[in-house]
Length: 154
Length: 154
DNA sequence: TGAATTATGTATCAGAAGCTACATTTATTT
DNA sequence: AAATAAATGTAGCTTCTGATACATAATTCA
Image (cartoon, each protein chain N blue to C red):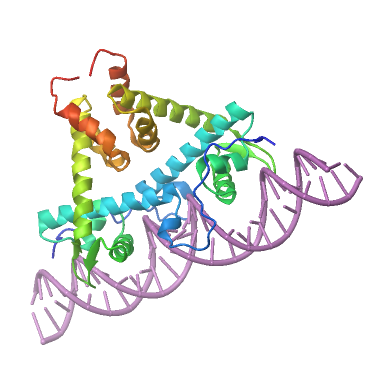
């Protein structure tokens, strides 16, 4: 047999009754959910700033999904305390949502600026940052910032 | 209405009837599926090299999920031509799987090396690379490589 | 104002990834 | 070889993200 020892990863499951959904997800699943949340709150913040309010259609267009998907995801975000909304009304960020959006935006801009500073073309930097921003730890982000603050480097 | 004429991101939705499932997925979904595939083939390659063969249990342990999840995902990978396997047998990479694994490994190592070279601590670099590697474009990867080949920089 | 258009909502489906519980097969030990 | 342990498989549930089709509310405009 290839493996002799036993289950290292056969739990983390808390058999103590139903829990809040989010807490029970695996690392990967939770991260993915967080990424989506970040994309949404960023888009909502952007739309609120640039157009006064964030509507479902605009989110759908911006995120490249149908309004149905937006609808359901917004419901999840509301459930999780990131946004508030009412039927047929615009979507607003809560304090928590605003904070997440701000962090995401800052991270995004730092990543883009860093990539630009080492010679990545703007369009590529934008595209890559889109995916990378969700996976950069605070430590690495600090390294990026430090390098950005020493423009003679690289 | 909040949106009068905006048209930032027109989706790619193809109103021309039912398509093959995979092609119809949104960008995000497809990317996520690819990430998982990359993680699996990398793990399979690693296990095959280090232990002679890749078994479900070992994959489960390594990837931090249950053997059931591994089972189903491996079935998908087989369906998509990345691996071959038979009931109660080990999992083997196809040519396609090997290629994907090799690309992933190379990308992973480049990202780690790059992060290390700009001063990110090893452990952090490893963890961040885990997430970042799936989102780095060939162009950016080339920039990383170029910088790595000029050790005096930074 | 009433009709047409646009936006939003609801019902219903699919696929992926996760889980637990239980069944079966293979490997190990006695 | 039989019993035990470990690995693998299967059934069935959940959540999330996507979709289409259709229904309803809100806005715009003739």
